[in-house]
Length: 378
Image (cartoon, rainbow, N blue to C red; front, side, top):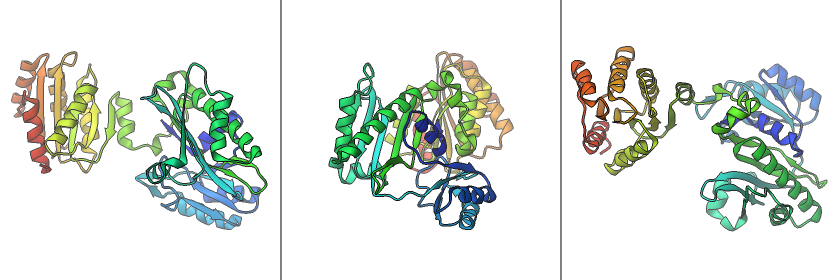
């Protein structure tokens, strides 16, 4: 679960990270009032779960309250990468001397939280890694001991030479680790972490992504979820108990089991097709889940064919077949559907489909080949 910048800043503030003041507003009039209270130049920042806000026109500098109102009016209601902007953050502009990047993410290969720091802040860390990898220092934190003082110092000293700045940075790095762990996060980053001409250090941007598996024991963080800033398909999938990830292909996949779903996508690629999604209906599906899965898949305008690949173990093939029939009756599906059903109650499922004028494959290779052919991507 992604949270907004202003919410991430609240988490950072709670552990002592120096974050400038800010106010979230949802109308141009509120933006003007906030700018008047802060005085001087302010920054108006779109609050939306998307990168590239600045490039999209979602970040503006306003020198006086009237300008803040005008910019807020422009930004509110914008569409940034398919997501609507319904609130903006008003925060005082800072006099920036230097910018750095400090981030920590869950590294599953290292089985630990891994820090990345770079003196090249304010730009995408992926770009820095690609063009100048030596500008990044990494450190994996042993979860048994947490962030040790000498480790925070080692990272901070890579960013700064001034002892005063190193001391400030090592405290912020340790605090960021605390925020990461206490929030059950997968990612927490400050980009940029700035210094001012007066030698002060501040986190003027914040980003956090929370592990969904942690939310049941952190209800206060779970309440931060903003479904209006999520793709509707992902919200619907979560509410239906489906595992869904949108991709950019044309073969819409509906599969039971994560392993089979990955194998199906691999086979689509093998036959020179492009999967449109990862969608796992789970090991104990029912017709309602199948209906929800088809509604999600058909909402993607890129999808040209729907591929069902069901191996019935716990999942009953006849349940899936009934779900397909029910979905066809409820949804106006104009796309071709190719189906593979094998396993538990396979014979009954094939009868159900045949009675409805449909057929199914039992070979995984054959059904994937047919789907790729129909998608026109072979």
